[in-house]
Amino acid sequence: MNVADAMTPRSEVVTVELPGTRDDVLTYLQERGFSSVPVIKQTDDGEEYRGLISREDLIEHPDEDQLALLLREVPTTSPEATVEEVAKLMVDAGTRRVPVVDGELVGIITVTDVVHAIASGEADGDAAVGELAAKDVNTTYVGTPLTVAERELYYANVPYAVVLDDDGRMCGILTEVDIIEVARVVEGEDDTGDSIANQDNDWMWEGIKAVGNRYIPTRNVEIPAEPVETFMTTDLVTVSRTRTANDAAKMMISNDIEQIPLVSGDELVGVVRDINLLEAL
Image 1 (cartoon, rainbow, N blue to C red):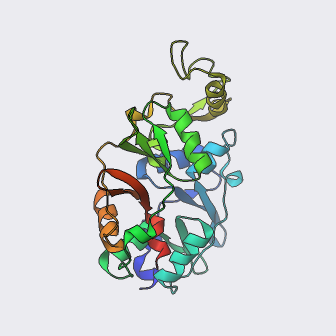
Image 2: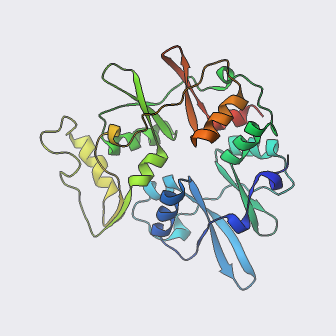
Image 3: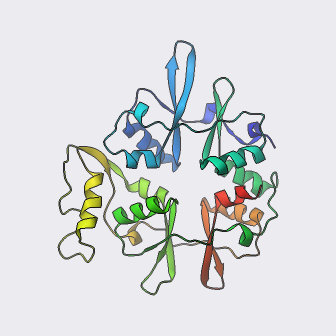
């Protein structure tokens, strides 16, 4: 299966244009739930592809408003490349979306597009997920402020956290999409002060307030400080070791998710991420 058969064509790709602002990107990511957005510029010679801007770029550069300074260069591919070739490219480059360029931007192929190919049988899906799953699981506590949980995702360098209750049992999952959906752009505010937590909050300490301050300088992306349980998904989909990549791909597509906790009985033993399915191709 070639990239041209799996990609989203340019006519259906929503882009942002230079010059533009972070508001344009944030609105797009919130509405679509994507991890990044392609950036183009109109020139006398036509449309030029310039790069991608991701969720992380918005949060990690809170004072920067101009898209040109938020751009990230990622590898590109051609329509003739195979799905297996682009899957390897995504894994090696650590990117979820690869622009498809043939002189100009002709489409974009995502991890989800490759997962669709695995689910449909167009790409190999015979491997058992027990062999593909990550054994190191990123977790957070159900009562953690969302501002802190976002930092936990960032430092763990994964887009999710399995949420644990008071007994240490899995009770939900939090993703980058959940966070970006409730983020908002704040202007004209210099300091959050005690807005991150009040004096009666068990999570009130200087580290929390420092995290809060980084999110709201004069112009920034503000993330609510309510506990994770307010934003997490509680209707969990899980998978066992013996299920195949094809099975997991179908579950991801039907439930619109990017990772599935791996369980043995009631015990959490790993996480199968969509990128893990690509690693088997």
